Length: 193
Image (cartoon, rainbow, N blue to C red; front, side, top):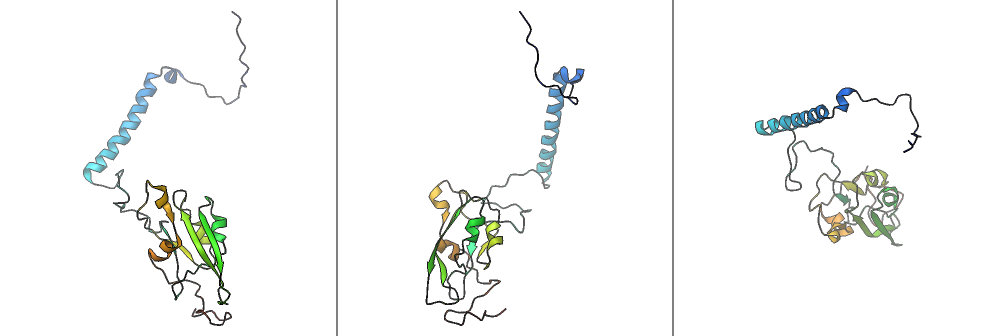
C-alpha cells in the first residue's frame, strides 16, 4: 500500500510533545491533582464558613458581596404630576444591542413643554443583557436600573415583558436630574435646578 504524503503546513514554532506527555497517564494524574486541589480548597472554605465558592439560591438569597451598582430591573422616572419623564425620543431603543425596548410615541399638542410622550413602553427581559446602555443614552434621565431583580427569571415568557405601567409604578422615582416645568408653564423656563 502506498503511503499518502502529509500535505499539512509545517510551522517553525510547532509544539513537540516530550516523552512525559506521550506517556499520557502522568498527564491524566496531573489533571486530576489540579482539579482535586481546587475542589478540596473550596470544600475547606465551605466547612470553615469563609468566603469562597458557595452557592447562592438567587433570587431568594442575595450574595453578601453583591455589587453595589448592579444593573437590575428598569424603572421610568416620573414628573411631579405622575406622568413619565420619557419624551419618546427612542434613543434607548436605538442604542440597545439586544433590541428589547419597544416605544410607541404619542403627541399632546396642549402641552408645549413636552408634547411627546410614550403611549407604550415595553422591555423584553427574556432577551435583555442588562448592559445599561439605555440608561446612559437617555437625555432626560427618564430610565434607570435598580439593583433588585424581583420575580426574575420566570419560566413563562409572557411574564418577562414589562409594560409602561409596571415601569412607572413598581418603584416610583421622582428625583430626576433634569426637571421639567409643570404642565401649562412657559417652555423657556426649566424648573428648579
